[in-house]
Image (cartoon, rainbow, N blue to C red; front, side):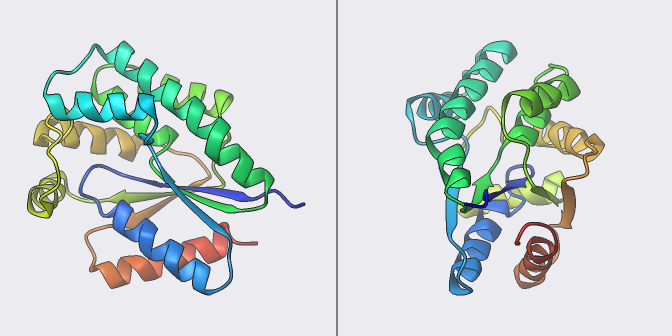
Length: 200
């Protein structure tokens, strides 16, 4: 069986990646593709520990935080991503290795070293859609959506730093998406990129 494809939707909080992933998954299924939607942090015990920490306004040390994210990713890859790829499915993940580079990099760790380690330890994505948006606009979206706040990460200074680190990342598998366009235009760009780079 032909191996599946892995596509990561990346960007700072409020960039619209989660909404666009759901729209893309629905459109791909309508056209006959076998799609798996997943996310990081996961809903497993390590992922839940990360979510609880993010909502508590009590961050752990940057290295401990990175260790939690890597542990969660290892479980995610073993339990979800690798089996789906082996089954020939198209995996769409909301966050992956670039998020660790940018977010834990913004917490003071070496972002390129984090990304390089992630590429050694886990499947390299076939495509990363990196949604780019002004951090202030992204934070306004976060505040308006009414979800549970995550004060550890959802601060303008932190998001601006993470966005700056995302902007420095250069890999052949990265495709940048202007996330400040209207949602329908963004969706069209997402589907064009998927058709061109990720769908056999």
